[in-house]
Image: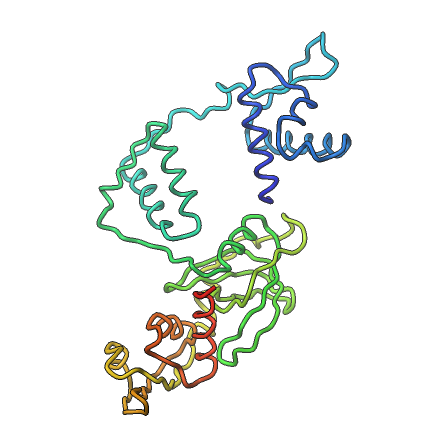
Length: 316
């Protein structure tokens, strides 16, 4: 479901809940943002679809026919719409608090925190102090995560440029996403690759540039009983071969990097040459970029390019 449609449905629910008397379709058209820009026929079709969708998910929209009025009126009786009292066991409340903590650093943090706040406002106790010893965090700083998460939610295909492991070649991919999965601290999107005609796994850190939605929402079909974690877990490209890297490190800095190096030798102009072994250029790039101006990657070229992209992204 698109964001615009979601907002329109939410505004319609709020409008019908807030009114003390039934509202005609024309009154709703002028009161609810999203309806006022359409013609008469387009509005009627959209309004009928919205009413049906809300009823399908359990929103009780009532129709009132006044003999003195030509058009029927619509409203939502608050007593019929409100949920019954929510009672949670101590472990269930703890899970809710833990879930909010997990998403603390993610783009969904605001939604998770808002849900927890609404539960508290409804009188539900969520004892976060009981789980204070757990410090789970989900790091979703990959720029492509929000767009892919929305595409999975809306069941919509996407297109993006993807940098392959090892060679660093960039190719455009068209994907019907089934889900976004985390494994060993990295995020992957799983789905049907239209170009290759098979299921594929793509690491978010290798997506270059924006993720563009294509086509209409609701067209992506997720196969029944598909195990996304299994698809991610058994990909061959997760176990990359180890390779050597040559770095220039400023003298007297980066002691932790030096301890893991295979060899360290003096270089020129106040720099040392450091050799170490790595497997994933993106993971190496994240480490090297965090060391700032004290380290430069000499080779291989794909690791050097990964560091440059990260630094340019930080600058932007």
